[in-house]
Image (tube, helix red, strand yellow):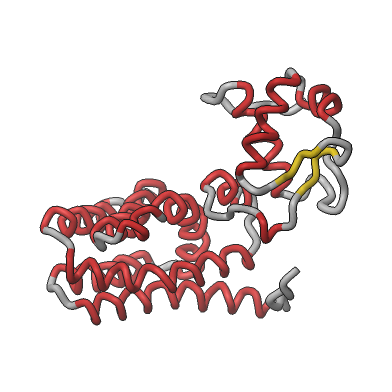
Length: 244
């Protein structure tokens, strides 16, 4: 029987555990999930809790439930990977380098332009928030968890400073994935002073209202992390999988 996380009601806990099991491959993707009755027995919950969980996971694009067809896992291209729960489940434990590479590819398409927009449109308060996050990184050089949170705050603050509502709406996605990816890329790079200096270049360009320099500095920061991940993938002999 699963041990449910705290701070969730029964249906939410069921959603968390079943969703995580699906994303992590506990259930074969070409077969139906267990029946409602079997899930009740497996997780020790009521049929109501199972049905609510199925409804929530269907909304995330993970599964479908139809009469006489049972509960089936949908193809991965149907999954709402921008959903923070789904992203967190896929990144928990030992995330694959392929997932980290895809996330960095996503960031490299978004954050340099967000930095450029921040240099053009951010008000003083938004720029101060970026600077405070940078100072937090400096103050936490010997405190990894605090440094990680400050790093995340830095990137999320730039999304807000861009004044672009679509970029701002990505904050939960970026924050969730950064919580995992920074742990990996910073360990690979290793030099905390260099990491902080790279972030400072982005901040200084934004503060000095230089959009092109802000964009280039952010592009370089993310591209370096992406290069590290691609080198590790090459060492492991991994290639980009064909679309399914």
